[in-house]
Image 1 (cartoon, rainbow, N blue to C red):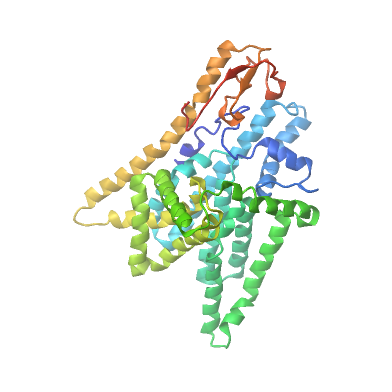
Image 2 (image 1 turned 120 degrees about the vertical axis):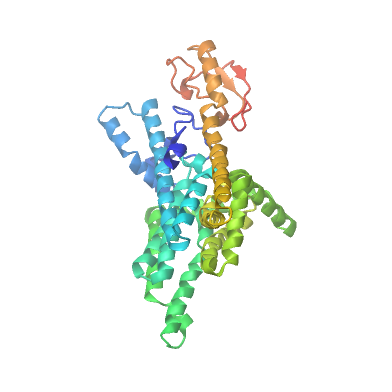
Length: 445
């Protein structure tokens, strides 16, 4: 059901139009491939997802080599764009699967089912699962790391510690901001090793925990994976340039609030408004109630710590540092807090004296959330740019010029209204244009 909800409008803006802001496009990957991810190549995003998309696009390249597709054709570019979005769709399914595994370890079977449904019905998850943005892919790697973390805290196995290090590094290698999710939770591994060392009665348990071969092995593998992802051997200059841009224009240029107490308070207020908009009021109440309930009940206090710590770590070490926030930034927060929301609904439907009423109200919350996020699909399918394309197809003919004053992101696919005779933006002539002023916001013009 989640795949169906997320897959609708996967073709949004295609062919030729890349409407999702910050989406990785085939041209972005082509530029990276042309430089072989070396020789000073860099982007504001880390390289790992570029590698993934380059690998996924290999069949298209083979079809071009076999002359089944013309190199640089609109069909080939569209196929690459669809494959990139399918990667996000597959990552969304993998994320839900991992949420299920984590929930079964932490909160029980029925609470896990409620958590799955609620997270699947969060607006940013539904939207970004159908675009080639980095948000759902790095969320998948975080979910995998969180699952390994739970296994480490139970058994302290070397394989799980290494798995945690690899998954966390790949999440950061997909989108830098993921580092905030691991800053505090990683300390739980050190604490668990200290508990293990203290239990054998030998002296200096903290020191012995810090030099534990399992911890050092996991950290060493993570460092090696990080160096490989960023191609230190052949692209150190590109890595340095990437760090410069994320510490400069890619972060400071977006700051919304000053580094003051009042600024941090305003940022927190903005974050709470984003939470409400992303979840809708009924599910917002459920998420908050789940947190309170998990911390109040002794049986779920360990789960409360494990689902709260990544969110707190992420906010303190990333969002509060950069001074701005968007709904997609909170996807990993919604992932972990959905487990608490699952506990809340599980507790709610368990009342004996009014079980039928409580189940009906829980169903109403989920039904409301379904309608709330389904509107995203409806708005994407009925995007006003499609209406403009149909209009242009009847009045603009080959040889005529179309000018625009807003970024191409907010314009229709320029190839779509040229009756098939002009198939790319580059072929249009821009002298003495007809001007069409477009102001598109949230699907309405």
